[in-house]
Length: 493
Image 1: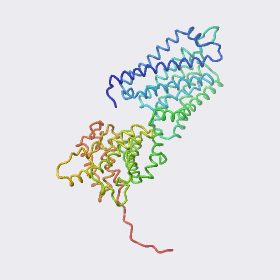
Image 2: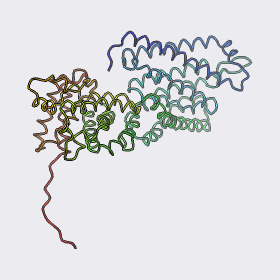
Image 3: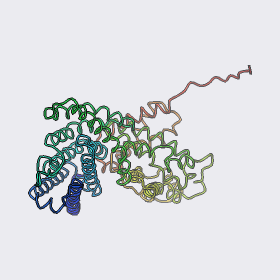
Image 4: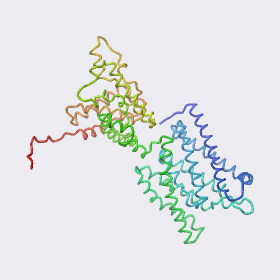
């Protein structure tokens, strides 16, 4: 989590926010233009007669935009440092406003997909940030409805400004606020597409209840109540459908790492995973085990387990360049016997940089590239360093036999560093008893602490202890002892 912004980051984030405010205002005027279709009134005439309302909306939206910036500055500076994230949030806001306005204009105000923004926010933001942005959206759509799209305000000759009644404005605000928060909380627990469909059914009850409770006192009619219930159901269904349709678009445009996207990237059909499985089967099997252990460790310390699992799948993709030069992909002959230790070190350590380049070339998330280049930190490649020492008369510079780094900058990268080394080392143990594995893992963690590999990732001793314990339990489960099969030949029946 970023704790401080540079002056350049502050300037660019403010500039991006100001431009985003201008875009939101342009979208609001576009919404007014849509509402004026078939009315015979032009936009200029509307602005001239309703200039006070236009100014009120502009000031209110400016205040909300400013509040969003202030909130993010104190609660999530990392978001402000990612300018594309600011653009993404306001683009989503504009899409949601437009979608609601079009449905309200041509179908019914109660049928508007008011929960769409909340569901999308839940996927691209932290929970509390998503809840805050959902409140901003609820206020923004309420302000637009009351001042620029109200059926209670007339232009001239008793022609209403818009089509949204006051009671409908309050119903929509409550729906956004209450049901949006419910959707955000539930959606954070959903990991499958079918779960999203079920979410529409879960939200149906509170949405219908809010609309009936707010609107029925003004429309005491059974037929009207049935229409309200029907359009409320349409709101839920359309919100989820729009969410499922547009989420992949935002995932692609902004490289969002949603649970759905992460699962697609770790499928055997994913391009690099498929190549790894075919061209470097030993590395692929190693990555599968590391991914399982990393997921367990991330869960144990409260990190994103889906992200840890996916990053672990890609941490060694750099070995695709020379798969036969790595022990897990070799048969009985070691190709490094023909090479000098210096050349071997260059080949081995280059797999971190090659992995990062390959990940970026395939337009995969930047986080995967960071993990690929950081999971060995600045540790020495001890096997070839020891080999070089035997061949040398004097001392050698250990930096020439070490990885270039950098050291892990996230807890997930630190987890994968530990799990990667522990899994590989455990394979070489002749005795894989829990005691031996525990001693090995503890030594690996201690060695990395002594080499200052965790100074940049803000991981605590308690978390390292939990990770070590989880890795031991996981490895003893993977490499448990088996009962020896009896040497018995069965006769043919």
